[in-house]
Amino acid sequence: MGAASVGLSLSVVAAAGYASAGKRPTLIAPLRGEPAPAPQQVEFRPYYTGIGSFGSVLVWSDWQPGDGRWHLLLRRSGRISVLPTPTGSRSIEAALGPGPNGQTTLAYVDCSPSCQVFIANVDGSDPRVVPGSVGASRPTIWGNNVAWRLGTTRIVTSRLNGTGRRTLAGIPRRKCFQNEGKPGISCSRPEDGKVEALALYRDQLAFIDSFRLPDGYEGHNEVRTESISGGPQRLVAMLGIGIGAESYVGPSWFGGKLYFQYQGGGVTFYLYRFDPSRRTYSRTLAHKYLSGLSMADANHAYGASAPEPNFGPPCETSHECDIWLSPPLKFTPSKAPVPVPRGSALATALIA
Image (cartoon, rainbow, N blue to C red; front, side, top):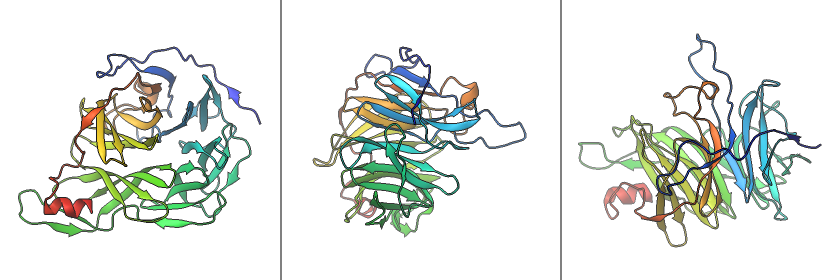
C-alpha cells in the first residue's frame, strides 16, 4: 500500500531560535493536535507522545481532521507522507531504527483492540506483530531486538520474533535520599513510578523514569542506561521535580553517545550529550519546551515542541506546536547533571 502525500512547505523557519548558535531552527511541520475539549471537561488529552528518527528519516504522530483520528507521518527525502498504519483515538507511539539487515525499520504500537508492538518496513508496509507484546507502549528497535514499556514501571525486551524475552528492572526498587533540613540518610521504595521513554542502541537501553519520594520534593526524574543482556543500571542524570515542572526529555542515541534535554519552568533549557565510554558530559543551550527529541546527527536535533503541562493552551489554539530541525549545535564540556557531591554517602546510595 502506498503512502499518501501531504502538502506541507519545508522551507518555513521557526520563530524561536537557539541562543547558542545564533540561528533559528527550521520548521518541518506544524502539529495540529486534537481540538480542545468542551468547557465542562477538565483534562486535555495528550498533545503528543514523541518523535523517532534514524538517519534522515523522521516519524511522528498527529491528529488529522479528515477522519478525526491520529495517524503516523513520515518525512523521508524531504517529503512528508501519511503512513498506511492503523489509526488511533490517541497519539500513536512509534520509533525508527535499523532492522536485522540494517535497513531503516518502523516499530509502532497498534491498540486495536489490544496494544501490541508491530514491526514494519519504513513505509508502513508488511507489518508484523511482536509475539508476547500485549499491553505495550513506548516501543524502540535496534537490529534484531525490540523493547517496550509494560504497564507503567516495567521494561520488556525481546527479539523481533518474540523469543529471548526479558523483563528489566525499570523503576528503581529502592532509593536513598536526604530529607531537607534533617540529618542522616533515609531509604524507601519509590512511589507513583513511571518509565517515560525508551531508546535502544545495540545492546544498550536508555530510559527516563519519574517517581515520588518523601524527601521534600514533589518527585524525581532520572536518565538511566542498562544492558539488555544483563548487568547493573547506570544513573546518567537525576533531578528533583519542583514547582517549575522540571524534567528530562529524550532519550536519543547517535554514534554511541546519549542525548537528552533538561527543561525547567522558565527559560532554562540544556541539551546534554553523555559519552558512556569516557563517562563525560557536554551540553548546549537548547530550544523551548519539548514533548519529543531525536538526534538527526551528532550536531543536529529533531524536536517536537508543545505547550508546557498545565500552563499552555492546546495545540489547536497555540502556535507552540511544531516539528523542527535545529541549527548546528555547539557542545561544551559540563558537569554531570547529578546534583549530589560525589564521594558522599548520599551520592553512593543514589548512584549505586
